[in-house]
Image (cartoon, rainbow, N blue to C red; front, side):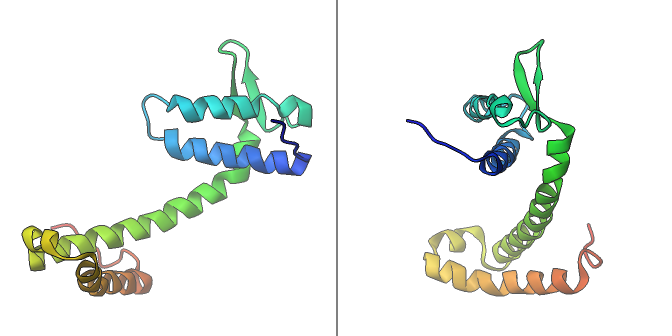
Length: 142
């Protein structure tokens, strides 16, 4: 199989590969080899597209790494993702905590998915509204 890319498409692919591999491996002690190896393979074509400024090859380890320029070009995507994910996670976790407090884990386990979603919605709405209006200003730890 052969896939052809324009320079711009390949540049976008490099960014997508970096973002995907970053999401999977950024918090791991040992990288997921499936994603790491795929990234290495895609990075290995940078010479053909004259995009060595985005990916550097470490001769000692014979591995490719995103350059500082590449990292800078996609940091905004990572920051936006982290920010959005933070709010979604905190809303979900606080809503779940309150729901368990009010209904108990056993009762929640017995609920149908429709009942669960119906009962969960007010908690989600409460925290979404609170954080939209006040950010973390009113968030405290007991």
